[in-house]
Length: 341
Ligand code: PEP
Ligand code: MN
Image (cartoon, helix red, strand yellow):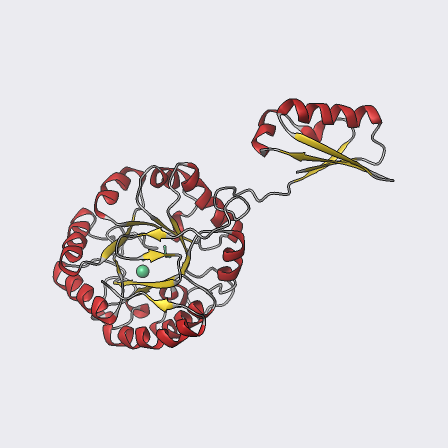
């Protein structure tokens, strides 16, 4: 950080600030200008927790030069993080496509969907057992029974599974079934939940909050990483804007911005962004073209009768067609789509 001294700061005040910073463990480099003096201070900003440097006589302001997200940022780790899921890796040259219904509704339909998305080329299966719904009267998910169905689908298809946890009390139980734990948009700033999943060893799919800035999203990742879990996959799922033609507005710029700021992989959820199956294909291709490391897409065998998010779900045949259309888009940006093993 840089401590900017005021124009009228005396030599004594400058020396006092420098002495204080040195005592706290910073290495200091004063730069004496014609009008003002600034002091460059190198060290962990947390050393300042006990002292208010801005209140010292002669200090005008403090300017941080490092991003607040130390573990999630690129400043301290330049190489991309590749999250290994066993049958697929996310964040390398290959693009992972995750697919499945919004919610697990029953065993028969879930297994049929799992087989169909696998056949179409998805490498990971999604499904919600705990559904954070806008209305308390909507279907809330099958909870642990849903997770058992997911585990059966994994056994049958070999696809790894991703599912959401919404409550700190369920983290251990969800982690015992899931290969990837999802933190939904509505819980992106549920810091206790972030800490709790940070204590597990499972990769975490961290969705961007409905109205979260990229910095807030990376700080949410920082919470998980600070608890010890560095296996994070960020997921752009559309943000709230004034536009009402789509459920949310996909923030395509988030992909190159996150790539610059963070070493973590980023995937895109075109289904929750669009809210309408008709736009899912275009948004998926745009995401891949912009550098996304993967996609998570809702697929349902009977969308009109889905218990949640039917209008934005692709039928398996449309999903298969999209998988084929993604191949040349990925190729155009020097990448390939992972095929299921
Ligand atoms: C979901 O993936 O089903 C979901 C609820 O997503 P989001 O948290 O992005 O709304
Ligand atoms: Mn959904």
